[in-house]
Amino acid sequence: IAINSTNSLHVVCGTNGTIDSVYSVNSGATWSTKRNVITQSGSLHALSIVVDSSDRLIGCAKNDITNGIYVFTSTDSGQSWQKYKPSGWATGNTDKHDCDIEADSNNMYHLAITGATSTEQIIEYKNSTNIFALNNSIRIANGTYDPNSGGILSLIVNPINNNIYITSSLTDPTLLRFYNSTNGIVWSNRSINMNTVFVLHQDLVIDNSGNLHAIADGGADLAYINSTDGGMTWSTPVKFHTVAVHVPLIRGSYFPVFNRVNDVLEYAWKNTT
Image 1 (cartoon, helix red, strand yellow):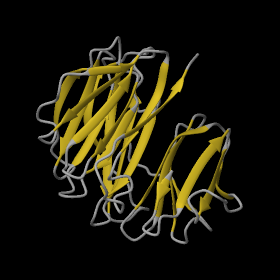
Image 2: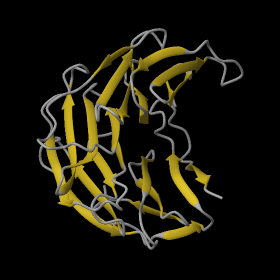
Image 3: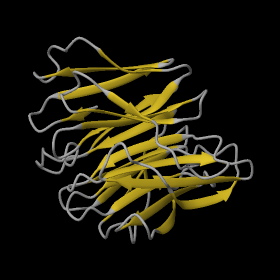
């Protein structure tokens, strides 16, 4: 889901090889007729959608059969869509797991994915001011291949200074991996023990003061941490839900960036029982 500057709600959802979109201009009381975004052979999932500072909708998704990452965009509030398949991924990246996309205050578009070769797991990142030119990725992390690692990532950009943050459980499901960069070229990283059995899924958000908040699930519990210094140091993880948690989401005042109200964090998750 994404919200534009006029508070219209935009939702994309996928089933099998189809992604459709709907929107609401009255806080969800009524919804538009659905519009097709992408139709492809194979399952389309790992959906992400955001709004840039010009109210352009941008999103990404993964195709299971073609192992491709698709970017889609709309400049008319979801009435019509264009799709694009970025190229230039790492040699041998034949098993892409997840993708996420963001736009910063200068309308620089940022795309990150997790994937795997036959011997290692990797995170790749690319950016461009042209949404149709997201090519030639940078490998920012790699590790020994682990078929039990989720390889799920979250990508956000700080609206205050355009710093880029990525979290992932890549290569070691007992740790939350945090990566940050000021320019998308040079990256630093940290490993955070989330005080949970393992980290399968996670999500990350920034509040009005620029503080980072992250949650992660281990399949049977949910843990929360925060950082007040841009990810240099993190709080002690706190477990606050312990019943079959799966795919948690966290949102705050910077979702969307236009609605900067009181700092309120909201969480949602799927119970697996």
